[in-house]
Amino acid sequence: MEQKRYRVTEEPLDSGAIIQRVTDKNAGAVTVFIGTVREMTKGKRTLSLTYEAYVPMAEKKLAQIGAEIEEKWPGTITSIEHRIGSLAISDAAVVIAVSSPHRDASFKGSRFAIERIKEIVPIWKKEHWEDGSTWIGDQLETTSYAEGAPEEDKS
Amino acid sequence: MIRILLFAGMKEAAGTDQLEMEAEHVSVSDIRLFMKENYPEIPGTERAMAAVDEEFVPDQEIIRAGGTVAFIPPVSGG
Image (cartoon, rainbow over all chains, first blue to last red; front, side, top):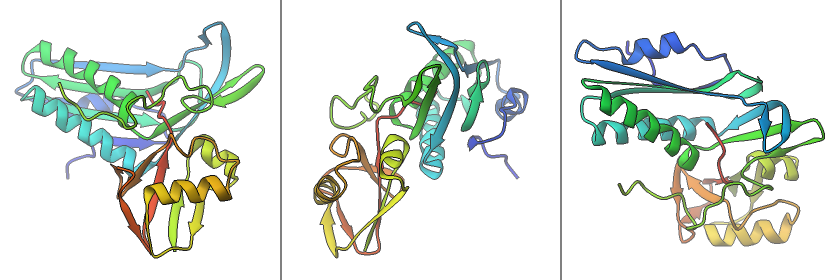
């Protein structure tokens, strides 16, 4: 049975297993992007993070991103996992692996994937600071839907 | 009855991850008004995107009794 290539999980992410899912005899390159928990943001010290997701929709949207990558760069294979729950500084929050016959598509595909995650995948981050906590993208309005809706990919 | 799913800051302010609305046939806009009037403590009801069957839907989308709509505040994954 083919392993699930798009997953939201409370378990620590295993980048080796995610790389295995995109490894293919026709591939000449695999890129891996790992998004990790950063301690300092604009002078504020983060102690830990909590991620929450609307899991079934988030997995569906991750799969949509993979399909968009395969359409833009034929021959690519993508796998994305996002961790939810409580994460510590330096923990991996997201791992994106993209394989392709030639390296250019892997680099471009993984960049595209992380930007799209920040647009359309229902996952939220709550930052716990020394002096309080806030859901990012909500009260702080560090992100907002300027156009009234997440844009469909037009490029 | 229509089920309304809440997440992140909306869920936290509401103190629950689900609301119920007695209705047979309403648009997403109607649900936003219902939430604003009955749960003014929930932030961002105008701004959150609505989703049905795990896909984003426009404000004109009609939800029927027995249906579920999820409100997706601006996302911050990655």
